Length: 94
Length: 246
Image (cartoon, rainbow over all chains, first blue to last red; front, top):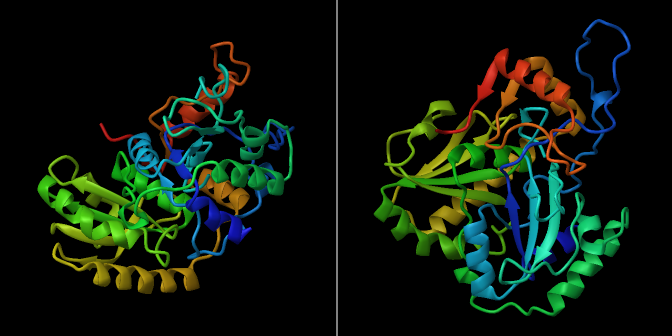
């Protein structure tokens, strides 16, 4: 996995557009009682990133303008990802 | 988003564009594997193979040491993305001419194999946006380089190191590597479920520039008006609120 992530940085320009929303995941279970219970981890289901912290990941371009400039400079195609760095309004996570 | 997903507005989209930024080389989808292969749930290995096939048709040109620098539209976005990716943020603030002058210093640093893919980078003209200091512990008035550790929710942060305007590329690199070693040794990888649940319970709310709500069936209407209303309620009662920069 790590080797492939590093390879992605050289052949492709990765561009990430972090300007959009994110909703709750389909795995969220509805509460059957009328009481509003605190949210629990069972409501959201995604495993943590396998990449060790501090290790090299994708060298993202985080504006379209810089991604286009690099694609033009290096003649590489653009791996495009649009996503929100938040879920249900909780930031700090993809 | 709607163009990439054929009229749908959803929380993620993946595709590959040609160098012109307009021609799609692959299909698109809400997951990378789907976008690259056109299959609903292929394996990650198949998706990686597809990327390798595409890359083989586009040998990279130009000096890697002169790769265009990463940047963000706002510091607020940079801080949140750095938090989400759990990478340290190298942040440069200065006058416009200082930002321009620092680019040739930073280019070889950020494309260095020991540095690339480990940090996020943001540069701002101080005359345009000084709001970055509001939630950053240890922020100062000086122009220069700040190595920032974004907080758990990407709304607050802390300066780990400051380097002045005239810092050399070598100094910047060594500082980044040193701070990254400490960061890697002490930071725990976030668990998505725990993070979101804790954030909800703590009253965190981060407002995006795009209005809340998906349109997965592409009919032009928000799919779940109830969830949109709930989001608005969370915004009103938030204890840690972040709004887009005006």
